[in-house]
Image (cartoon, rainbow, N blue to C red; front, side):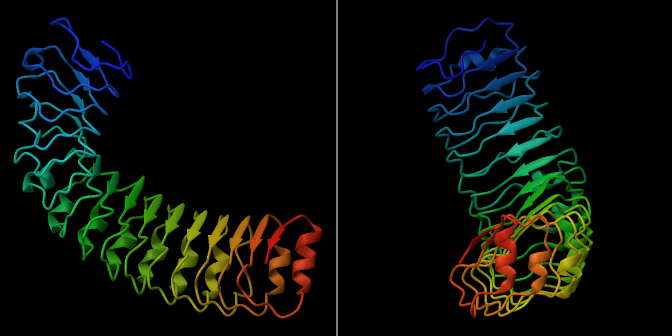
Length: 338
C-alpha cells in the first residue's frame, strides 16, 4: 500500500497480509486499532501526518521499520519486538519507552524536548545511527561508549556541558554533531575518532582544542564557528584529508605555521576573528578563503601562488594601500572582494 502525499485524512482500508504501508505526508489524525493486528506488516511509514496517539503495536512481530517523524505524538507505546528502525523526530514525546527493541539499528528521537533517555538505550549494541538533537538533554553518560557499532551520532542543540571521553571509543565514520550546546572544552579522546569524516562543534563555548585532534586522519569537514578559540593547535596540520575548515566567529589572532600542511583543504572560513596576519604559507589547494572582518593590514605574497584560489573575501579589513598580491590574483581571474 503506497499513497504518500495523497491528501488523505483517514487511514485507508488495507488487506490483512499487507507488508508495506506508506502513507507519509498526508493529514491522517488516527491509526485504527486493527493496524495493530497486521502480523505480516514489515514497514510502516506515517511521517508528516497529524497523529496524536498510536495503538499498541507490540504484536507486530514482523515489523522492522517504523517512520513517524513530524507528527503530534505526545507518547509512544511499547515497541514491536524486532524493530530495527525507529524514527520519531519532531514530535512532542516526553519520554522514550523504558524497554527498547534489542535489534534496533537506527533511532531518531530528536526534536521532542526530551530531558533524559532510558538506560536501555546505551545497551543497544547493534545501534548504527542515533539522533537525539533538539532536545533538552543535560548529560550523556559514560555508557555511550558501549555503542560499539555506532557510525552516526547527532547530539546537537541540547544543553550538554560535558563531552564524555568515552565518545572516543565509538567507531564513528559518517558524522558527529555536537553543535549548540554548552561545551567549554573538548576531551583529548576525540583524537581516537580516526575514521570520522565530519565533525561539528559549532555554537559552543570552546576555548581550546586538544592536540590529539590532529590525529583524526579521515576528517573531511571540521566546523568550529561561534566558539571562543584564540588559537589552533599546531597539530591541526595533520588533518591530511580535510577539505573544509570553518572557523567563523572565534577570537583567533594568528594561524599556526602548520596550516599549509592541509594539502586537500579547499574552503577556509576565518570570518569575524582577530587576525592581524596570515601564515607565510597557506594550504596549496584553497579555492575559497574568507577573511572578512579581521584586523589585517598586510597580505603575504604566498596568496598569489595559490593556483586554485577562486574567491578571496577581504571585506571589513583595512589593508594598507593596494597590495601587489591582489593585482596578481585579479589578473588570473580570482574574484576579490574588499
